[in-house]
Image (cartoon, rainbow, N blue to C red; front, side, top):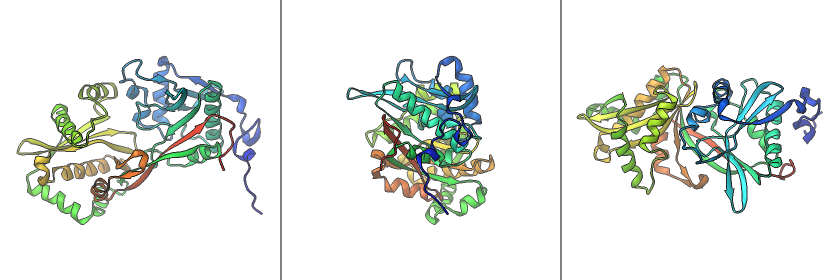
Length: 352
């Protein structure tokens, strides 16, 4: 006969569920632990380049009030939590690190549900004890997790967190190989890729970031926006993270740059297209389609499982850029949810 799980089943207390909560401790991150942090992220279940200290280090000192945490069970590091403090209307919240695309806890590859529960409970208790008003975590999509799982989302729900944003990104599956991925292209997308070849588009890796950045800034200016990173910042990021983790692929027509994509190698599973731009004077050459197609082939051959093309939503997911979604879906991509959860500090009871 089945029964409904109660709070005591979900939140380990004392020696219940084989875990001693007294063994879990939270330590504030300090720069001298950067190597330990990054080594853990590289071996974790859900860590990415965006969680590594070398990535977060490009921000100028004092830009954020860093409140990152490291969670230990006895002497073993079982999670890290990249975060910062955000003053808001006479309150201060602990939020996913603003210098990163994703936040939330990064947990050990072998973390159990009880471990994840202990980790998140310890983070909430630390935030409450520190006098902060609440927490806001922007989690990564499943495609960015080496070992996909929903236990973090589940435990957040049991602790009373509520979703405050649902953004949707488009991700292309590469696990079955390049040929299988290309068979999933929509017919008009496949025609665009073939047209690019007929139009003389050549595609190659490049270090010509200045030329691409000029095109990118022009693209975004059309929408009243600017790149997240300046040219100087992206060059600094490349120096910190390595040229093998941040790469630029360009499509050229007659020697001129017509389109390009900056990809971040998130981890061993996923490649992320962080910047996508084209020179609209060359739009009819379909150079951008050729670049994305080449990245699909490269990613599959390199053994990555996913190629993420980024979100196509705005205003916390309430506005959909349908044209952008249609373009990305043409490459056989499907939607992956990127959810932000929030909790006002208080008793650990689930909101009904």
